[in-house]
Length: 325
Ligand code: SF4
Image (cartoon, rainbow, N blue to C red; front, side, top):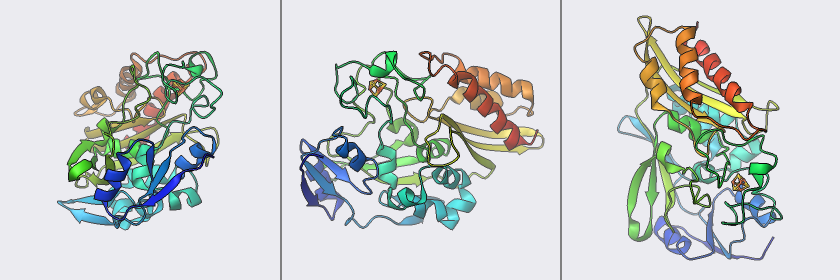
């Protein structure tokens, strides 16, 4: 690990001012950043510790909930209001990492976690995300965990997390604060970026801008599921995942909010699925059609081709479970 300066910030305003300076990174739980610093993938000249900022509360607001960015993943997953009204979020968080990591990891940090692409984390390998213009090792290398949707010829990495997938299904909003206290709200669905020509940019944060909270909408009810397919049953990233909020009323689907993890550079939402499903009677032919739409345009690079049938089957299984057919 390279030497770095350490600075504390006890207000968002001071943190944004410090983080706007080149070579500066914010740290909260550090469960991803410290690993990357040990590997010299991240080499910040200065870390700004956010932990003295008093914003780890989970508070009711306008029928929904505001979750402070410094709330731990564990605090969110065990909150009784989240367990009862937003179970998809509690399930997604508990499907990720380990208890020790969830105790340390913050909500803001979880949104900002970086890809687990093997070439990104190995500084001896080419990687356009880590070193723009150096090439993409995964395109011709080991790409088993990589994206089948939303990728570009410059990067095929996935966003690896679980929490944000559930937040995307819930259509949660991220509250950001930038220089001079400039605030804005962005849908979780729009927070992460597809790589295009600039894979080094994971998300839409401006220099100095920080996540200060996530806002959940009023509870929507329905059956809420998080199905995660992985190579072992704990402490493993998803090969694909589905967050589903599905409600059936009088024999017809009244709500079908879906988001997918680990198949794209961001939590993947395809509104065509909701449009197809809502108003219809649940049945296997309908679910097969939804799965076809989801993977329409999906493309692997060989190693990850298996994800196309895998996410199809995972979606169908999740819809069958949610609608009890
Ligand atoms: Fe780097 Fe993206 Fe290619 Fe992985 S897939 S090596 S993160 S450019």
